[in-house]
Length: 179
Image (cartoon, rainbow, N blue to C red):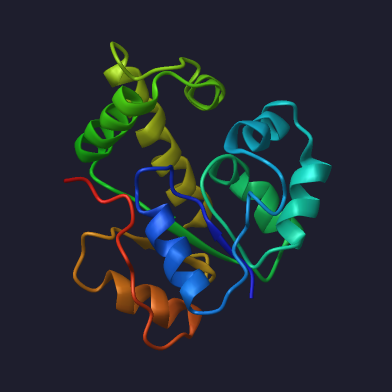
């Protein structure tokens, strides 16, 4: 099975990948790859798609940036893959990314993805990029049988993901949950 989690960070990607790891799937291990998120995003920013494809081939599940940015390529490269798009209310997402930035500061990753290294003072721009990504993903995957869109705050989120992947008893740990 190949599963791509194509929602932006702060939408539940860590929770879903942890649940899939717990269910026995091989989730991209940044430590084993001796990569950090910035190095991975740089591959995308530099259009090193061969490296990204080779990395994605090695794992059953990948999540977070840069993967949401190359969902079309992933669909082409892996025609049997399943895509899960976690979405979240844009205002709640913005609140979460602002808190995350407060803790960690501006980042090169945000610069590559949003064009500005911090959401602080650029809230509307960040929401605009977030909403544009959501619209583009929805348009691309409209009617696609290997696509699931889910909001993890929905009561049936676990069941919908488990059913979509043909797995029983999937439990989301809600990692990185805001206080």
